[in-house]
Length: 347
Image (cartoon, rainbow, N blue to C red; front, top):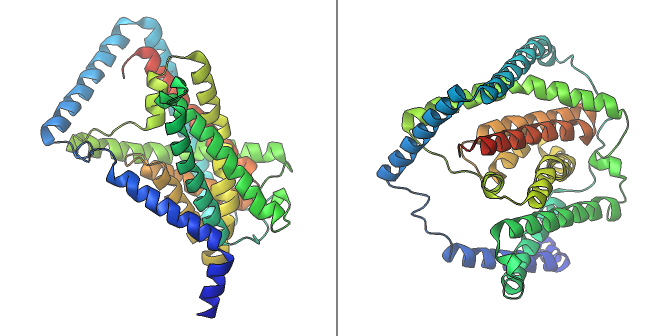
């Protein structure tokens, strides 16, 4: 009892913030979007599926009538096929070595984290708190500045400010509070080029796995005629026309975002979890959370597979350079594919 009371006294600020977050979240949920949108009637789903099928036929027709576009798609297809085959070769060579426990590419051992899971929870609480503060601020600012009425602009501001704050919070709880060097979070340039190489090879090895998972998902979707909703960030890229905004969003999604996400999930969260549940379960837990927070049912398992690789390669190299490299390559590929679809006009 005394320990609980002491904890409440010492951490009362964070407990009060958490209560605010829970109350605010309950208010938002009670006045949220109509749940009927998430549960579309069968007829609506069937209509959406037919629309998807029509787009496929339109795409086939477009490729048949446009020689340049056909050549581009053929080159991309051959490139993907080549990377997949190379990935299979890498998997065949490396997988037996990994299973035998002889695979060691360590260039810098990740030190044991001094911070704990309560520190991770504090960062999450502060992140949510300032997220809701921004919602309230933007609701006020939208009455003065019309630009805040634009959903894409708000998304850009929210992502930029909150991700910056997340970095500040993480550095405070590690470097300032625990007097740890940045290397404790995996921020190190030691063996930089070698770790970039490991990241490139790691992602190529993951490609066959991703394609297998996506193929299985595609078969299930085709059988059930389920039409998944697009992620908000994909909608942003497809609908936005402003060059400056698209450039910033692309850089954020492909470069800045991966760096910040790796700092939190692998450098901060994984390090804390490993103290309690070991390497394997920490890899699994961070990968599951990483996939779940991307809030897309169809992409859950591919993102989870990506998350496992990101944690594994961080554990092996002890630096975020490799995992950031993997994450950047993946996000750059996704951004490229979205822009290609947008350029064609089949959306």
